Amino acid sequence: MTQTSSGALRALAHAHLPAEIAERWLGLLRPGIRLTAAGGDDAVVGQLGGEPRLPRDVEWPVWEGNGPLSFIASLDFAALPQGVLDIPFPASGTLAFFYFDGQLDDGEAVVDPDDADTQAGAQVVYVPAGIPTEARTTPEELDAYPHIPLTAHADLTVADATLPQIQRAFAPEAQPFEEYEHPVCSKEFTEALWEYGSEVGHQLGGTPQSVQGPVELEVARGALGPDTDWHDPRLADEAERWVLLAQFDSDEAADMMWGDVGCLYWLIRRADLAELRFDRTLFTWQCC
Image (cartoon, rainbow, N blue to C red; front, side, top):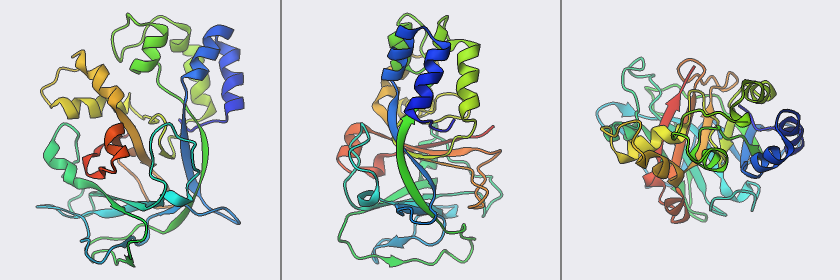
């Protein structure tokens, strides 16, 4: 679901929810940054595809035993809208995202949050401001994705009603990550939200826009361990520790297709983000 303007969301909420509930729901929405293809005089904040710029002493990311990762996107923190997110993004430096996209093995090796050993298939490289970089050529065994400059704008992001922070506000006795009897879970309201934006989109920060259920739940289970029961009460607390770093959607213009029109997600704990510990991200992906 793409982010919609605050005015549109306010109108939608008040059209389908009682006024007091509508205002409480609106107050729970988190700000995010939406990324779209730059055009005209748009400020460029990064790119999809093309060739990354990396320090000379940084090797191209590889998943040992599988091969080099494909370059997905890079972002210039200094060029992004400043002071709009509720998580501590750096004010400068660049971040490049790499993913083992199946080019080398027809998708046999899968990056899965339940298998820590596979997380090497989705890596991020942070380059602090002032560090010299150079353009890198894509490894010859990979095809580079088309280069698409990105621009950004801040907007509100919609949260699934089954997320712990939403449940706590409207149904504190509900089972974590399960629907409950309440207007915010009504078919009318959820369908209205879906009609406002049926695509996920590229995004930084905010609430992940999931394709198949809360992304935070998958990452929380990966953090706690693959033997964790899906109904373990610890999952709700753990899920709230993780925030979206970035998501990159399937994109026809960029020749990117993640499974069946899926999306790639990188999440990180708030404390690790504040300390620039991008090596502690967890990755998951979803598709239709």
